[in-house]
Amino acid sequence: PNLAAGAVRADVKADATLANVSGRSIPELKATVAYADSRYRFEATANETGRTITAAGDLVLLDDGREVTVNRAAFTAGPATWVLADAGPVRVRYQNGLLTLPQAVTLVNNGQQLSAVGTFAMTDGVTGSLDVEVSGVNLTELGALLLSQRQVAGTITRDPRISGSVSPGNVVGKVKLLAGIVDGYAFQSLDTLVNYRNGRAQVDAILVQSPTSKLEATGSIPFSLAKGVLT
Image 1 (cartoon, rainbow, N blue to C red):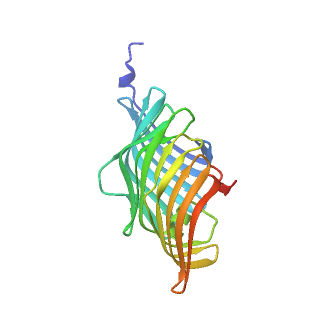
Image 2: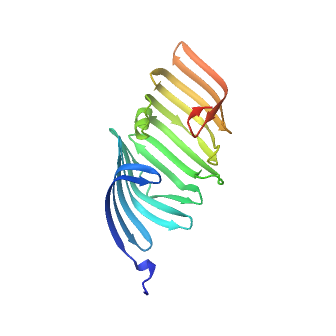
Image 3: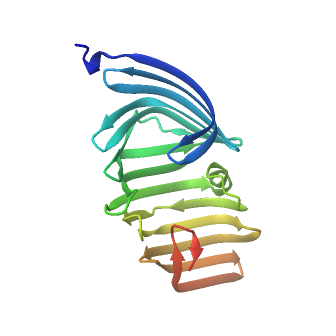
């Protein structure tokens, strides 16, 4: 009866199929969790069709949220594996509808880099501002990592800022794609400046299909960021 909560310790090992994590169905999940000093220390491996995710770290419950310290993480899709950069553990906090990356979270893969820092709104009523950097990324490998069904290829570099609330959300940034292929359409390069606000995308783009064929386009189009389609 006088046992303090901080003195409780427990170790759990679990294997699950068709596990549900934050609304997402995971075909196979293996995890080891140790509870001590009010912290959950975990090692987990999740297998989906075409993708495997492994991670290790600590989780602390907060008022209306949680904070995860990730010591090690890897995302494997096909022959490509993305891992946390050698910058020490990273923290990810979710509280009051806001996902916060207080320090840059960077994934690397053979010279390719994906990085994000800032805040991202997960629910209505809060606003965030997240800076994302994509440097020299193989679009085919990125599509496999995201389980995309589209035929894409090329090398992409971009630096968007995602701000605002869940709906409608704002995105401002530059995109550069070299030696690209999108659903069978091949081109040499695409340079685009995008400003998405209030359901419309303002686009300033230069598409070079060949040394003698170039298309320049400037204008705005109605677009649903949530659905990824024209509206």
